[in-house]
Image (cartoon, rainbow, N blue to C red; front, top):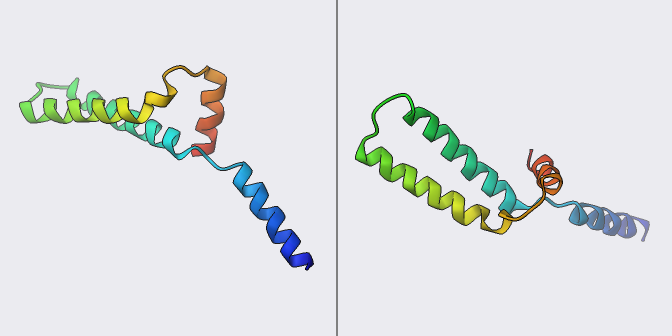
Amino acid sequence: MKSLILIFLAVCLFSCKSKDQQFCDCLKAGDALNTFSQKLFKGNVSVKESEKMAKLKEKKKVACQKYQIMNGKKMLELKKECN
């Protein structure tokens, strides 16, 4: 019986502190866009690269839509949970 109570408490603890996976996906999309755009600043941009850039921008826009209006303190808290 004690072990059931401990398992229940552990599940409650972990479920309360779960990370926001959608926010983590937003961060990954932003990082991918930043990394790719830094490569493009070094030279000429081909049509293929331009299309990839547009896809990365759209992916970031969709992933981060929920977080457009959020204060910095909350964003930093969510970012810590992603790491």
